[in-house]
Length: 198
Image (cartoon, rainbow, N blue to C red; front, side, top):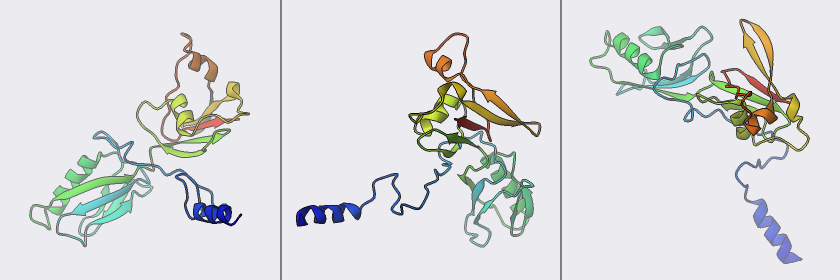
């Protein structure tokens, strides 16, 4: 008996990947930037940027893009970030900093892609917010969220999407897409979409 208690004690010291030590704590999937950031990625509102100006620690910093699409840096002030690629923003910062620094060397990294995400709710293993890659469809989203739970209503899955300020409900024929029927096609997700599995 003592042996089993000691084994249980040792096991309790470790946490398996994906498990929270605190049973009352809910685990929210993080929105990974690495999966979504390519050379053509457009910076959006709420994205977190790491801006490094070589040999200028007072200017270098990590900040998020404001709701108006701008960021603020010392010397430069406000500069538009939303809609630019990381390299495009870097070039704009270099031009702006040339007034104050000789040959500024700037790097811009999107550390959190908060603007490009989708949500999965309902009867899936891991509901939450996830990073949106180009070409991600509903089937991909369900797989990323750990798959359907036992009592999920496969024929009632739908996607909520905001179009011109109005929320649309788009039905999704899970069984038809899964079986590869010619009259069904995969629904590609857009930033801000929510997949709902009743």
